[in-house]
Length: 154
Image 1 (spheres, helix red, strand yellow):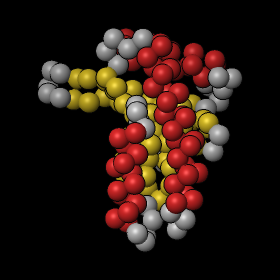
Image 2 (cartoon, helix red, strand yellow):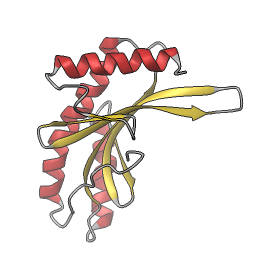
Image 3 (cartoon, rainbow, N blue to C red):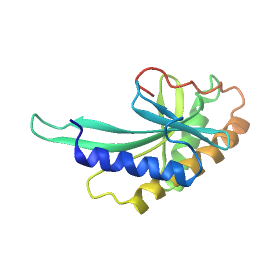
């Protein structure tokens, strides 16, 4: 049986997708328990993740990602400096790396989350990912194509 808060937030995700004219059933991946869609050129991934803090404390987080591009082979110092600078100015979103790829990401504990807050998190991530996937590729042209989500998502 799923946690009632998780079910509530997943219902809000479906509502948001319908609001932006994306069929939640068509973009849902049951194996990954995640939804995938595009905002411009940015592929968005969203899911609720369980985090065990202790044997009795389990927390659930809304996690939203977009694979932006592959870490460039050249000029990495300038590249990482640029990401750190953007982390300071791109409010509501941060860059992270995983398996040599850069991700725009945001997350929040779902306790007390309402629909307006959730849609703000999603919209901000969509906006920044769509801006920076193109902009950073121009600044660092030797980057590669973002990966497609595999089993388990990101």
